[in-house]
Image (cartoon, rainbow, N blue to C red; front, side, top):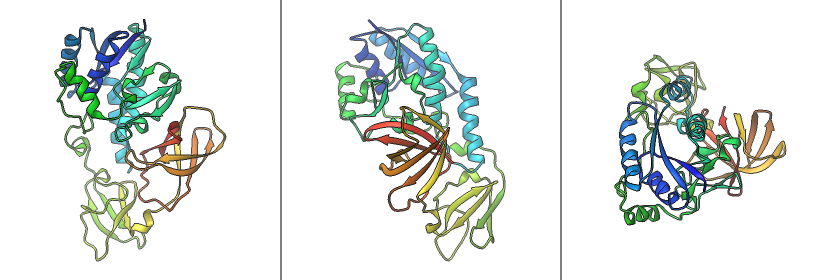
Length: 328
């Protein structure tokens, strides 16, 4: 019988994951201590473990999380990028350091409540596409995926998961889903340091106003710019704490590059595939040209607006993720 550590957040998905796996495996629960907001999750996960009769371990990763995720998040925003901390956390913390601890505690595998499938160590989309989380897992190293299980990937909808929780009388059956960044439950701007800069018309070079930090802006933003204009203006570029604005047509492009490329399977240097440039967008046909740890993406459709540096580009062949990288 395999020993499975379940990464437990105290929510319904990871709780059902643990309860289902206990029917077939030797299971114990693990929860990460990452920051001051972790304690409610730890308490909830401990209660679930007690209810279903498994051990619960708390793994203190606060220092590593601060360095690899929180500081990265702040630095990227200050550099005018739009980072995705959940993707970095999945790669560096949850399916990196946390997985290592699970294996040291005797687990053969670690299971999570992500909506995805791990088919013969290949990252495959969930049956529930509306909840699919493969985009957020596209940076996870292939050698780590070999030890990961996604038991919820075969379910068609979230209602099935809640029904299982209700039938098992799990205390979290009606707990709402979390929607916020875990270390910033309210507003990410609260952890940033204000720094004055200019708002500049990118076509004329004219300074239109000032701001208190480029982190207040993101590529493609139109509202809340803090300036007046006779025509609609959008954020088209952020550089050295200056925010450049211009016409929406300046946002549109079909070619960009990605770095820190994570290949999940072998492929040709030039590959035809589809890509997601945001978690919520549709897949876009593209040509991908790989160069060591980088790649050039050419979208095979109309030009797309607001391709944001710092966000993740996930690359798919049909319903499998074959690579992921960070948009430059």
